[in-house]
Length: 166
Ligand code: SME
Image (cartoon, rainbow, N blue to C red; front, side):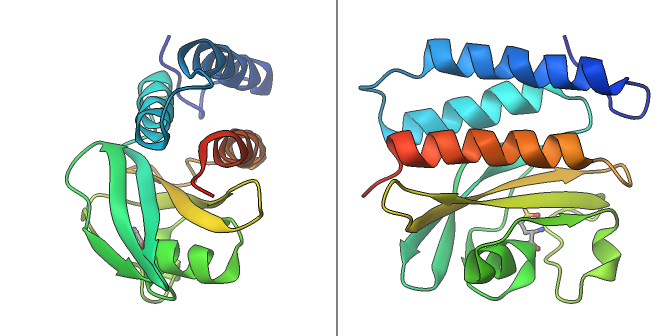
C-alpha cells in the first residue's frame, strides 16, 4: 500500500519500511547481480511511498565520478562529479545529506524543477569502499524524516555489503 508521511503515524511509516525490507529480502537472492539488486531496491521503495518522486542510484564508475544507475521517475542527469550537487557532496564526504528544501543547498543540481526535498545516502561495499549513492527526491517539502533516514541507511548498508562490487 502506498503511503504518505504527512498523514502517516510513525508506526505505520515504520511498518511500511518493514514490509519493503521483507519484499527485498524475498526478491534479492545471493546470486542476484548488483544492477538487478539496485533496480529492485529502487522499484520497491519508489512504489511504497507516494512522496518518493525520483528514486535511484548514482554509481561510482571511476575515481571521483558518479553516473546514473537504476532509477524510477523522470529523467535523471547522467554524470555527476564528486563534490558537485547533493549527490556529489554526499559521495565526497561519505555522509547522508537530508534536505527539507533543496533551495537551501548551494549547487543543488535541479534535474527536475519540481523537486523540493531530497535525501542522499552513500552505499559502501563490504570493504567499506563507496560504490554508489542512493538518491530520493520529492516534490513535497520536508518529505523525509528520521525514520526515512535510518531505514534508508539500513537498506543501503545491507545492499552495499551484500551486493556492492568489491
Ligand atoms: N538533485 C541531485 C541530482 C540528481 S537528480 O535530482 C536525479 C543533486 O543535486 O545531486
